[in-house]
Amino acid sequence: MSLRRRELLLSSGAVPLLARAQPRRLRIPHVSAKADVQRSYPALLLEQALAAAGVPATLEPTTELIPQNRALQELGRRRRLDVLWTMTSVEREQQALPVRLSIFRGLFGWRLLLATPEVAQRMSAVQTLSELRRFSMVSGHEWPDTGVLRANGLDVVVSPSYDAMFKQLRLGRADAFPRSVEEVWWELERYGQGLVVVPNLCLHYPAAVYYFVARDEPQLAQAIETGLLRLRANGAWERLFERHHGEDVARAQFGARKVIELRNPLLPPLDELDLGSKSPG
Image (cartoon, rainbow, N blue to C red; front, side, top):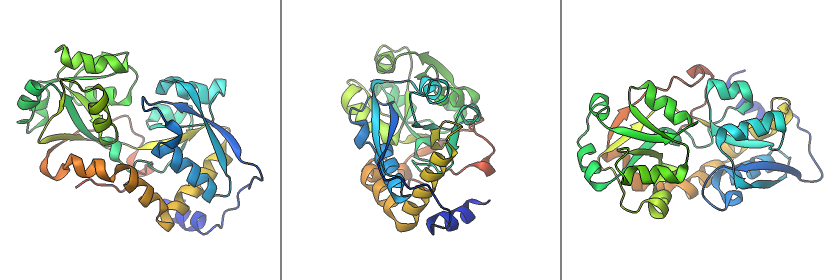
């Protein structure tokens, strides 16, 4: 069934769901250094989507930070988690059941670069992917971003520690750290001593962050999808997105930057994807 057909059916309420008298307790991972995961955009959107589908829920984040790949394991074999959100890939869609609606509307594929002022000055003149390959990038050991960067011929310095990545830049062990618009300003304020956002330049590649549930939870996946489509139809999704990300997108000034396009070989076939409609200007 096409996405448009599903939108019409689900937003109209034509597909029945199992309503619950009591809120369902859903365990979610603490996957970000940002402290209040329950009030984060993905958590709030998930709550609103389930409420719109008639399946209210209370979200319970883990107390410790959980790396993305480990979170997928907890979702499947160990069942310590019920829902997570992460960038999709062929491998991840084999491990868990995706809700194929891009919750960040493609925004995670738009990357600004953190660097020292000296490196940033040199990088600001980059015009082509070939020129970008003269610089090294730092990235996480199990992050999908690492595979994307390497697939495009970029030199990647892999770090097992999130905190250490910023230190790698200051020590000159890597030149730049590609970060999404949703992350970069927050990180610059808290971890970016001695670092700046590279002017005049950004990276872009197709990317979709989806909600994932265990493969034996199709009803939960259907409820999330139904709620998201209803929020999209009534404008609530757009309002929540703009409230959380509108200022960050405006600050990035994408229209004034040279965009270096990268391919993303980790994705499922593009005709199976919902990459969102957000195109920063």
